Image 1 (spheres, rainbow, N blue to C red):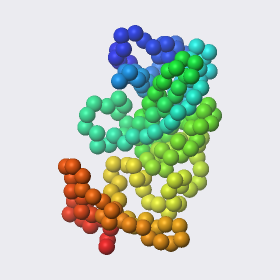
Image 2: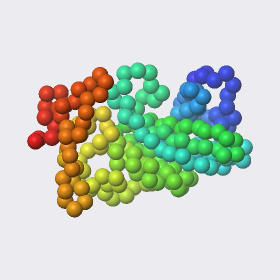
Image 3: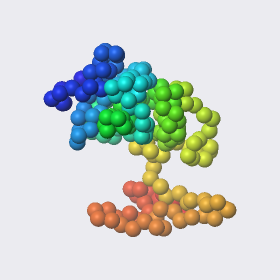
Image 4: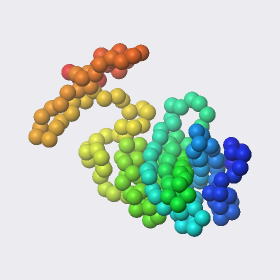
Length: 199
């Protein structure tokens, strides 16, 4: 754990007392606290934060993913992906972020048994990044069509350019039909020197 904060937060000390090996790192950034925990400890830590009478992190705000495969700066965790849970304690008027790292082929234990609201955000992270959540498994895609190939929020996924097929069979515009250059960039329907829409 890093010594980022002058005084240790109550949440951190309670987690350390209950699960001495769970915390990898604690980071304070712009007034927010990020607690990086081992994947296998995630449900126990989340349950403690929710059920401890002095903490009461009962409000599940969101769960998001991040792909750090092309990030060349300092990192909190060494795995390719991070899954970040945003929890709030209404009684303390406080927010805490739980972060876990995960690589391809690994799974993150679901928080659905603790926070029912975690079901859809975890399914979105699975659909868009390919991160699997053990215990939150459903056949087929969630946001994307079942025949979609790949995970569009991964860094290696190609930029758009595909025609959009609307309900009723109408074809919508491709990216180059509607894109306008903005400061510092000129986009003419190409990624590098390769046509992306095939038109």
